[in-house]
Amino acid sequence: MVLRPLKRHAAPHTGLSPNHPSLNRRAHQPSPSWLQGRDPLGGQSGQEEDNMGHSEFDPAIRERRPWNAGRMVGAKRALKPQQVWAIRFWLDRERRLRDRALFDLAIDSKLRGCDVVKIRIGELVSGGRVRTRATITQQKTGRPVQFELLEAARSSLQAWLERRGGTIEDYAFPSRTDHARHLGTRQYARLVDEWVTAIGLRREDYGTHSLRRTKASIIYKATGNLRAVQLLLGHTKIESMVRYLGVDVEDALTLAKHTEV
Image (cartoon, rainbow, N blue to C red):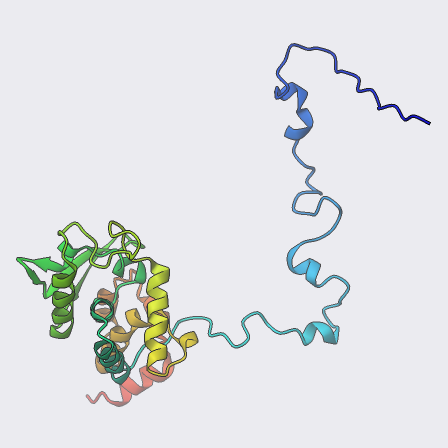
């Protein structure tokens, strides 16, 4: 028995392009509202698919491991003064000139990570010397913020920039792969992980925001002046800064206890 191939009937000639909308109406028709967001084969996606076949009261659901188990969610911890100096000592011992300058700048400037890595040499240097006070525009808010650079930070930055070279338009901390670009925020985060684990801290508890919070937390604990910390951090609302620092009723009562009239 010989099987003959099926004949394909040619579509009538219309003189239109095969991709003309009138010949492909079905592809342009929107899905019905009851079908949108669902699997075309009738299934469900995401968490609903994972829980299919279980009731919310089943023991199996209650025994499932939460996604954030063992992780620290929310604000990262600020470093303590002795931890700051421990990291500085480790970086000096390892002769990490760039990292020491980056760490000191992050501590003194109290900037977000995206602003730290994008800072240019001209924003730090004037007349061949590192400025004692600098001003940058924050990427997140678009507002200018000032910060002081203390002697330790000025010394490490001066040593790094003399070694690094470049012009005032160059980034202070260039990328390893392309010196015309700045250090990436993810690489910066990996460096912070390395620094904190080097002195015995858990990397899950600390991050780039820990460096931003460190000096602000120390100033607040020493003075209790929320307005001053707000100006230093560049926050627009004092309410958000209160949550940021973790100020609670106990802090307020402690301040009241040590204030005599």
